Length: 102
Image 1 (cartoon, rainbow, N blue to C red):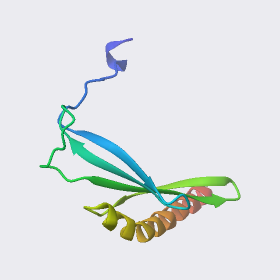
Image 2: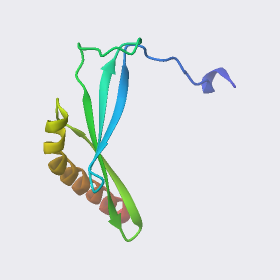
Image 3: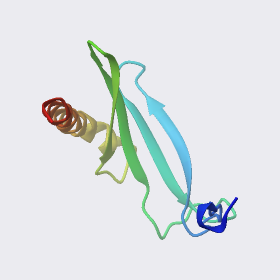
Image 4: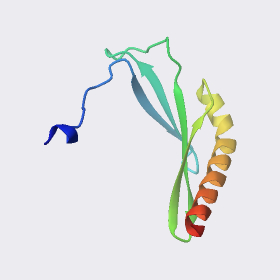
């Protein structure tokens, strides 16, 4: 592999997260990324990250929708999920329309 095509596989030990998944088995999947140290202990100096994931069916098949959820707790993430998914879905539709027009 040439030097300009070399991939850097260095692990960022200061930016590790433990990933957990939660679902209602219907429409909602929420990923919680809990910050951890390189030893796997919870890093209380950083906040967790929540990501909402769902999919919408189209005539072309399922389209995945994903959005960051503004939350500090799972309960807040669950509460914010519908609005975040509606916004992300609208944005995806607008993006698809632009691609079809251009």
